[in-house]
Image (cartoon, rainbow, N blue to C red; front, side, top):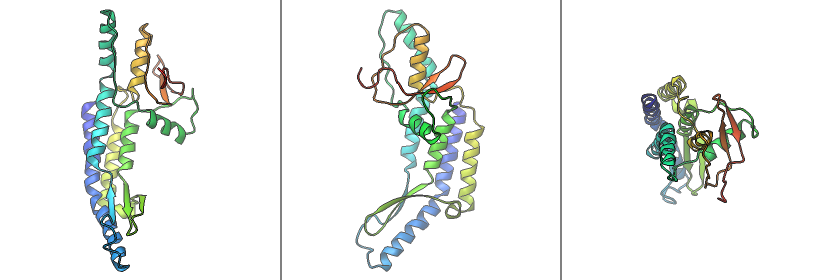
Length: 223
């Protein structure tokens, strides 16, 4: 699974590299427009910039490592509880915003079934990497999605290869919402869990492997 994850990240990076020609072309157009209007010195930020891949990769790796450690965390917590200890588990990301956005995009209500995997998260990052922010001579910034025509053949091919890599990988063994998975596994083992977060959405993992949207997150932001 780690190999699949690494392959997907490498494919996204290959696309990020391939799209730079398109980003540069859009940037040059913006600078040429500013120059034609005699505004080339009005602002130093004229041009186009894309999502910083290093930052994107950092966030994705953090979440991927957390997901891969979910089962081990449950076992460590149970061992601590059996020793009479009260473990505190911290996570870097609750995935609440991602789950909420996914549910809204598909008009899901609490209790509705869903089939969300880590591959969907990687797909989201790949899609985000197609965005560029264009700043004009007045300092106004606009976010645009690079079209296939703007990307060109090589970049489109790299995008499709990255998408295929993600779709062909099996990430079903790691939970997209580690915090929900950990809490619910501990509760099934007979322990009480209190959560301290401000998230609004989560996932209910059924004992049979099913998933459903959950809105009444235990603990919420008041415990």
